[in-house]
Length: 493
Ligand SMILES: [Zn+2]
Image (cartoon, rainbow, N blue to C red; front, side, top):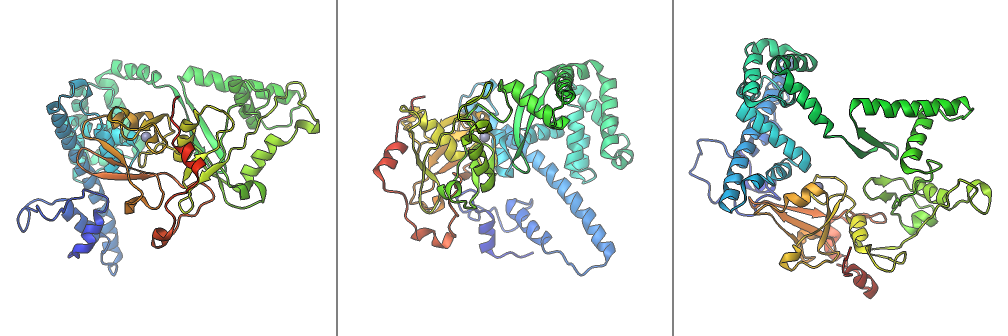
């Protein structure tokens, strides 16, 4: 299990800048540290492959138990981190109600998950470690997986701490029986116990769930998208029935579209108030190169907030908007005039990152907000991927941060608030910094533990990221005076 020192340093690339080896306590520490864990990982990647099948099956089981034990260790570490950060915040004078802010975000960054998932993982950890000791012990012993532990936490979420502990004890009174259950039977068993312990709490949870109603959008394959509404059951069934009735009525009148197509079109028409589903009135931004638009190039296009779409599809979309409806020169009755705006974007040679944008469509720019939205496309927090809701000053306005494209980043609501907790810092990496690459917009966030995370603005269409070796040969930024002026325009919206 010996590992050369060079590869150990590499393993911690992107983590704390200080020399981790310097303060190592003594020759052989009694308890393993993150450095030892990294050695185990190397050892696991190098298992003997020349073994009998019985040993292979034993290895599969042993590794499964190792994963579960690692999940339990992560849960306990997250709880300790939360307690320690809360103490530090209390010492810094943070009011009790706001303590704990940003801890889920730190867990998320360390585990390379979205902040929302980081918050859920921290909640799961607290429930397991502090309220469900038997489930936690089973996870640490490797007898249940992290997912099955999550199911037990989820099904007991509506209970008081005392009832949750009672459920935990009752379920694990027969560990062999519980371990043999499939996921569905496990959930059913936990639900039955929860309902017996506190039926009223289960009903209260149903009422609380209503408060979580909402609408979300996420990409589906083949340039489609899922528009999801989380609704109280009666309303959801009502919407579905209304769409079904409308579709059946249209089919009865001889409409040739399928029932599913009619329901989808009716949904869009009724929600947007458009006469035809295809005439979506809100602005949809499509970013593509001139070559893709005009000369049939294959370079894919991008829709900010959605992602990459094929070149041909993007051209069709533009063609549909510019074509005159039904071959006549003017829109017929009930046919809205569809507008298409072309706006030139300037990207930096080499990195393909957005440096400026035509704002001819409007004379006064809310242009800067739009610019940041197109440049960043999704929340700039690593692994977050949520839609942009805020244009956040990287260096706070109060600390002299300018309102320029350079000093703004697109973030979701949650990430904007998380970095307001004490100990979080952010800065723009100067172009001279090797990690920034030539001309790239890179925001470096430092968490209270001193870990640093660099977020690069995505490359726009029309660019292929250069190989790292060639990077230093490329020009650092564009020189046009017009482009610089637009990029520095004050943001007033
Ligand atoms: Zn975010």
